[in-house]
Image (tube, rainbow over all chains, first blue to last red; front, side, top):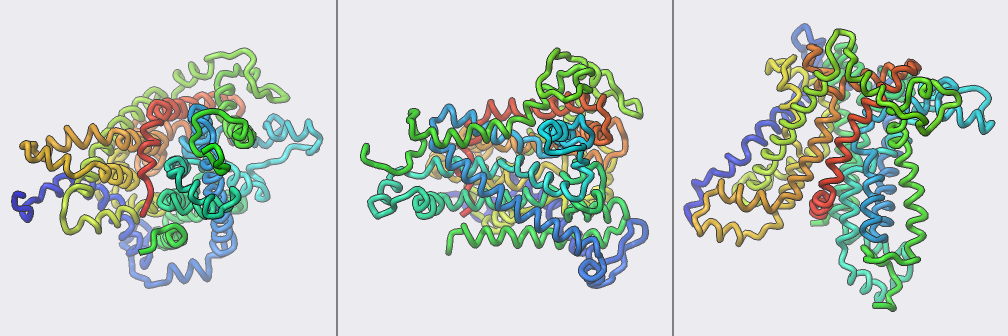
Amino acid sequence: MRNKKRDHSHWIFLSPYIIFFTTFIIIPVAAAICLSFTYFNAIEKPTFIGLSNYVGLITQDEVFMQKVLPNTLTFALIVGPGGYILSFILAWALAQIPSKMRTVLALIIYSPSMTAGVAMAVVWTIIFSGDETGYLNSILITLGVLLEPVQWLQSPEYLMKIMIFVTLWGSMGVGFLAMLSGVLNINTEIYEAGYIDGINNRFQEIIYITIPSMKPQMLFGAVMAVVGTFQAGAIGVALSGANPTPQNAGQLMVNHLEDYGFIRYEMGYAAAISVVLLIVVYAFSKVAWRLFGEKD
Amino acid sequence: MSSFQGTKMNPSKFHKSQIKFLLFLIPLAVFMALPIVFIFFHAFKPIDELFAYPPRFFVDKPTLQNFTDLFTKTNDTGVPMSRFLFNSVVITIIVVFLTVVISTMAGYALSKKNFKMKKAIFEINTLALMFVPAAVAIPRYLLIEKLHLINTFTVHILPLLAMPIGLFLVKQFIDQIPDELLEAARLDGASDFKIFTKIIVPLVKPAIATIAILSFQLVWNSIESSSLYVNDETLKTFSFYMSTLTSQVTGNNVAGQGLAAAASLIMFVPNLIIFIILQSQVMNTMAHSGIK
């Protein structure tokens, strides 16, 4: 080989990626961490205030502790594992039907995730529209379930449930495709060997063969599910048409952050929320890593 | 193995034992498709059917009125809709092309070159799969302001070019290419650039197709740059315009529904067509998507 030590060609290939990656991902994260220790209103220079933002977030921000955090956790714990398990079951079932039919059904199931929720908000605003021309109201009134129309999207009682429903509907994304190809690529001989070794029903088969054989795809799917869940913040605002959402019923951390950052211009405080959000996402992903990561 | 009673994965023929899966999958798929079918019908409804009570799911007398209205409509400040669509198309083409080039180049270096930082860079990238852009919207805004990118066309493009999931997928895919193949080409005197364009790129087409789709979905649907970084109406994108239509619908503005539905359809259809064309390539790439 030509002397490898002076070969710097890899930097030529890598540098464009690294430049954009650093500029738009690394630096913003670092800046968020730094700003979170300051008071910054976007006009004056940031002043260092130590941990006050975090202390304030935990002890004084009633909306955060009473609404945003519980909302975010409820939303994440239902949509994350729910969407993930649903993705797996669908992928598993799809793998057991012939290829042509599978392609068509997989396409239909994947398609809601293509538009990232917000573009499809119009369908949901029409379906859940608050007067009697709203589709859901009209159906329920005809069936006699309701006597008068419900303001679905403006009601604190229903908004969260509708957000969860809509997000689940659109959550069969990249992770779902990865799991589908994972199930399909498991060597069939492993199943036959498993049955010889005493597996005797479908459930054992999934637990002892299917999932362990596709751990890497399960992990990829899990990370995608976590990220998708926490990214889905825009949906509540898109559905109700307001930030903050009615009585903060659908307020998630992402919305709270935008509320402080872009509406109240308390950038330092918003940065502290960012950092908490990133830590929460990281913690959830770590759980997935524990479950499916290859042990070293 | 006719005696094998377990799961038959990836069956080649239809067998009645598959009926139970179809009984579960088909109703679910129909249910999931309903909102999309609905938007399709809604976009073609004339105004009296949009107002109809009780509301109807199917369209009775389809019309293109909503689309012509949409295309001739201008927004409040007099910018025609076609301008937004033009912006979106140009931005999307540039972003998809550059993302593919940048990720594939980086994937090649991370997969086939040997250097010190290699492992560390890939691990940081895997960590960045968990990155939630919305979380750092504020520092991003400040940074973009410092770089004097506010109110420019490039602000739609630059922040989207580094796509961790794209690099991740293409690197995993390039890992499948045997080193011997590259070694042989090198012995025949092929330059690094030649190896990249003549061997790597043709062999990783499925991964490239996948990055193209993912990056397309990201940029085509993105409203972040238009709503946060751009004030100049002529520089905003179609997806942003469409999101303003949606918020008008919220106020129970039935006339706007037809327009919003037509705009949704224009947003959705390109996603669908591109995915249908490239789906087999995507599935091929996803087989290597696992995180180890």
